[in-house]
Image 1 (tube, rainbow, N blue to C red):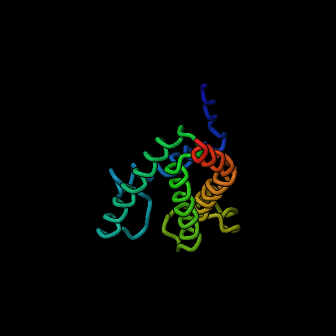
Image 2: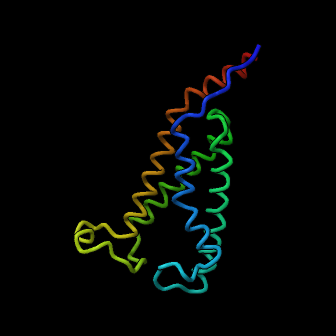
Image 3: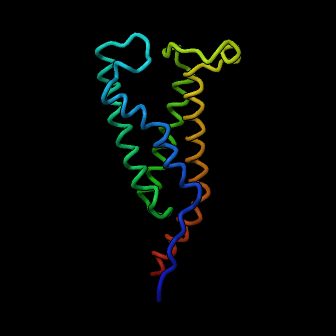
Length: 152
């Protein structure tokens, strides 16, 4: 008797979106943090940016490895919740941050408070929401897998 192969949920793309949003910061933060367009960089901030780059690189690798796994696996679900919390927290931090990126998206954008920090925060917020949506969309799959495990 063969078991059906679980189909990957289309919302699993959120794991790849995490990589797309965060891998540039991971690479730049690890190899050349002084070239990041941030104001008032000190030796302390450089160390923290490198540590943040290492952490983000690790989550990107974990996301790449988890992307193709079945939705019901506890490790994939744990990573999704951790990334949901991470992105929601980053969003809040960036929305409330003083200007630290010395670029403008133009006068019209500035009049609507569309600064690089707010745009970056919005992307993090949408990704956090994406992980929450993925979680809810796949919770039934996890429940069914748990029932099969108990029955088997």
